[in-house]
Image 1 (cartoon, rainbow, N blue to C red):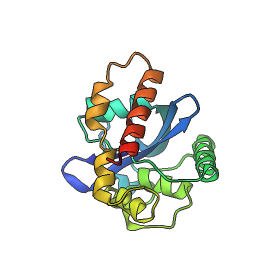
Image 2 (image 1 turned 45 degrees about the vertical axis):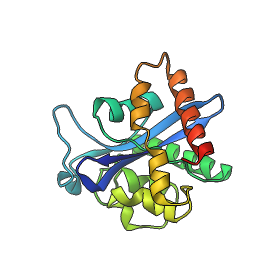
Image 3 (image 1 turned 180 degrees about the horizontal axis):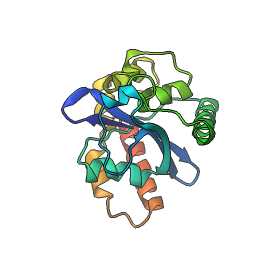
Image 4 (image 1 turned 90 degrees about the horizontal axis):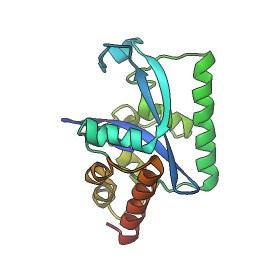
Length: 192
């Protein structure tokens, strides 16, 4: 999932949604842990101002926060990964989450941000888009991890901002997950 930084094409927040049987989703977002009344600053993030946090949550909470509450564009890109790669990535992220309990780390705008922490867990070779995070989706498209004929069509298909807003009153988290997955599958089948 990509959440572009409004007014700043070089920056975006990235996080992952994992699909489980029964049309259920679980998400992980990696963030700078801010204390009460502490604002985020990319500049301060260069100097160990924030602790690193791996937050796991329901897709509904993660998606509606961005698309509805913050009014940010939100894109869900399907990833072409083998089952083994998906399982390894999930295990790596769980292990990294657990390791923070005994060995806390600092968030760093360049070295330990949302995007490059995911890239490290996926064992991806370093790329500039892991720092200039707004280009991460294009880089994954170029790697053939995000499917599509052109990046522009893949990006258009991934834009779920308006759709997530229609789900804000879903009856349950399970209903949200099923509706979002149904819409993503419909778009993929149509090649939109």
